[in-house]
Amino acid sequence: MAAVLEFLGISKEYRSFPRGRRLAALDDFRVSVEEGEIFGFLGPNGAGKTTAMHLAMGFTRPTGGGGRMLGRPFGHAPTRRRVGFLSENVALYHRRAEFLVRFYGGLNGMGGSHLAKRAAEVLRLVGLQDDAYRNAGKFSRGMLQRVGLAQAMVNDPDLLILDEPTSALDPHARVMVRELLLSAREAGKTIFLSSHLLSEVELLCDRVAVLHRGKLVRMGRTADLLHAAGQTEIVARGVAATDFAGATAQDGVVRFYVAPGSLRAALEHIWTLGGEIVSAHPSRRSLEDIFLEVTAGEDSPAPRGLA
Amino acid sequence: MKAMLLIAINYVREQRWPVFVLLLWILLLAFLGLIANIPRDRDELLYLFKEVAMYVVVFSIFFGGTAIHNERKTRRILAVLSKAVSREQYLSGLVLGVTLACAIYCLSLGITGSWTLGQAGFPISQVWFLMLCVIAACMLAGTVALMFSTFLNPFFGASATAIVLLGLPAVAGRVMTPGWDAILPVYSLTMIVLKSSFNDPGTVTWFPIGLAVVETVAFWVLAARIFAYVDIAVALE
Image 1 (tube, rainbow over the protein chains, first blue to last red):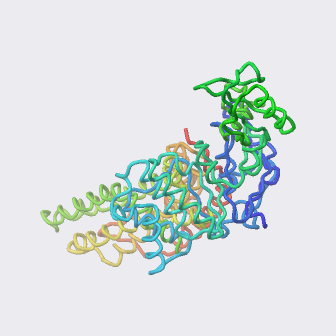
Image 2: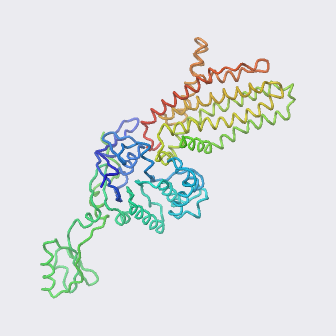
Image 3: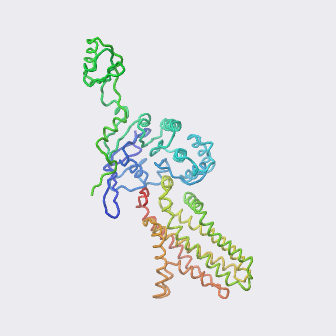
């Protein structure tokens, strides 16, 4: 598959004024997002996720390296006609929602009845059809986020870059957005999103990358990462927790994990002891476990100072 | 072109309240035109007309100086520049927006001035020429302030620097030779307006207007060059 978004060893430093202290927001960052996938971008606050997205959109200039979006260098304005972007803190003009979506569509060269139709369609998709003629200045944060999503999708983009797209949404709206993104993937769109809602990312993303202090610390297919340990979780009844290393007893059952080569021996040991096997299945770590593991041991979420 | 127009119109809508407040001065001029004894008070009316015309030149500097700052501070600029809009187009939209906002004002002032001063015998064609001078001065002054605001974040810094730069030729014109004040013609254009009187309404001279247009383009190009290197996503203090 072709790469839609490529970060090619890109770095970004911020320099404070007047002291001139340098802060590394992103350091030799390399990621390639392929066509038709949903790519999740994780990291603690200040890890550099938003910086990476802003570099891709051309809002900021890299201090080193570069990247390509839809085959063109970052910051190429006409390429953004095929891109939809939603920023973390959605800030829009105080106008009617429908006007806003048409305004942003117009900036992308759309117009006429096609734009009017498309604006109504995307507002319906984000569940704002009844509020389309209300002033967005009076909207709640969640509703604003949905208008932001509508303006990002108005041009039917090939690539969606979404910074925390569900952070302000209620559970119903989250499900709606999740389905929206999944159907966009079905339609062949590529989605690059960041989120702190790890359960959402687990459900949505084909691949994830974890960024920490400006560096890429883990990347892979979501399914592979979640099953990376290769261990099997065994739940048994009628045995003591002390009979198995690392076992815990709760509600009359004993739970423990065994490495792939030890599964048969562990099951036979349970039978030998007169116990009963309740379940044995591949252990599945949550994304939260992985996230905490790779970002552990750091109290301060801020980028490190180099000076 | 379409994106530029959309940005310009949007800018005018965003500035509707300052423009509305400015228009109240024109309403005052119209009111005085109604109640004044025209033959007796005509010089006072012309004075007020010229004074009200100068307000918009000052406002154009603040319009230009604050345009980018406000957009960055509210982070609305991100949604605009996430579309297929280059930074040059964005700036040209703002320049056009500042000019449109000032032109709306000048159009209203021109209509009111034609009516009040026309009754008093001031040539109406000269009223509209003076309005053209004001619009040209506003366009250049706003663009210079906009250029400074691309790298001077505190908008008073950008506006103040623009005022100093635009005032320098006037000082040079007084201290050295008079020709210096034509270099950045905001001062010379405003002087055309301020020097007009019933006895000598002035003559139509297109050179300063043409120069203002050329320099507006030059400052827009310079602003676009600088703005291309600005990290617009960095939070403003």
